[in-house]
Length: 298
Image: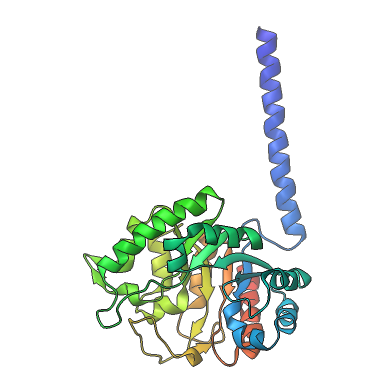
């Protein structure tokens, strides 16, 4: 029996060593290809190039490929292409939809539709961007409670099928409630969905995106990175002039601080979004800025 115990301990020790070796090998591989162990991926929301996609999906995706972008959000608008052809164009350009677009209505009425869409594109996330509400009244706690119910129910359905539901706040959720905001209430009462932070809309709604990340570590699994022109007035209705989108690092968001905190939390996906008419010029410059942050981090 003693001998058998010794053999068991030795085998266990060997197993641990092998596991450590695999980890070290993986870390070595990441270092060899220039990626840190907690590597993040820089992607883009395809809505940024909506006007270009309307003219030519293949030409636009070819340009996105030239930028070195391999992961995107989209799939909500196929620009009049059959879904198989749209997917084919993505594959041709080595681009993966890792977060598929869904909607409040789809999640409420048919969450399995979001599952099928995500599975078709091979996405790990399904993200929705707006909670319907009365503009005259503004976003209320009743609107929030209904949304939480839908997010929890639909989020469970998606989770059961290997998909993570994300909600992307737009700034109208920052109205006061209790000792905080309605967004605080949503974050504290949602169990089966995660969140995506659009740093522009956080700032637009009067919040500091870095402080919100620090207050809720682990709740935001991806980011929308876009910067805001200095002097832009805040708003609480989820609306802003798209031409206030500027090159990352040139606005008032504090992108460097956001990125530093996001890396610290291990947030994997940083999606660029630029809704301005200058998107084709600005995205490459924003990419260069993010690369410069990576260089300084090392």
